[in-house]
Length: 235
Ligand code: URA
Image 1 (spheres, rainbow, N blue to C red):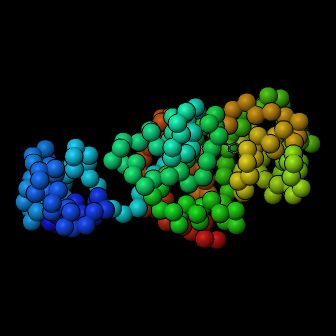
Image 2: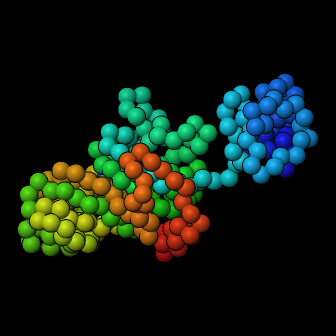
């Protein structure tokens, strides 16, 4: 691929402007200033524009293990964001596909593909989300049944959709819900007289958080994972 084509596509500028940038010495290939627009790049060549690494356009899909205290927004003047955990060359055009509260940890998906994130987060997709929930009090059988059948949340009229509860310990459950109402898990537990002490998202649909990712670490989704997600979100 020619250098000017690569720079234009990776940066979003026109071919003419890409040639100009190259001609004025703003582009380096493997650390060396390169002024030849027609240079043919090898697959592993490393290209920068004004010191920023360029990567070819095309949608990006990542999973991240969100640590506590980080917010799921693209921009927040007061708090660290999930995007701030990524290197700058990856950040461009990315947004989180769905949100977790600042104190919730675990699986967050990030993408540059707005249609993909819409398919995943649209209420109609009913994509299940699984949380490990640490509780203030042991969960009673009656409360467990109510969570499974659907509970009425404060200030809402429609009950939550049926959920799945797996007991891990008396004060820890694995809860799978297929909606994404505001603070849903915390409000569901409040509705049955309990309180969430810690919340960790383990899975979205068929996609489980990679156990090898430490808090704050991320990795691209594999082609297989993307395919599985497509199948689930379409159903
Ligand atoms: N439900 C909550 O209450 N908080 C989250 O972060 C996710 C689901």
